[in-house]
Image 1 (cartoon, rainbow, N blue to C red):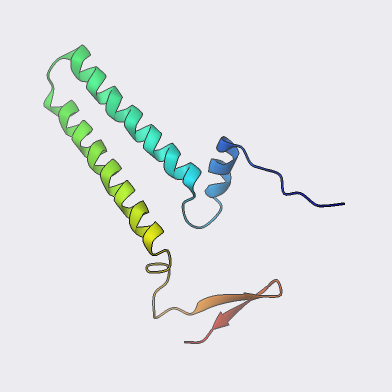
Image 2: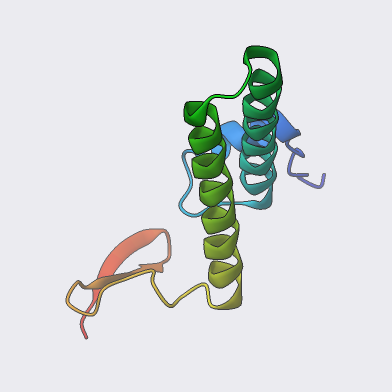
Length: 104
């Protein structure tokens, strides 16, 4: 029999991505959706409550975070190994199910 890897759903992949290093595409989409909803909430509150500098600042901070998050994700996709480890720390090497430290 062939062992098939079960396919994860969207929510399940978000939960599992918290346990794995890096950010997968499901988490990226999830964070983008949440931040866009938050900006929409700030704008809706701006119309409901009236002009408030606090809501404008909160919307600007959220938009800034959304822009920075997407920029960082774009940079990580261009070069995924660039910022993954420091030159002073030993890297781990995985062979035959056991983990060994590589000397640099």
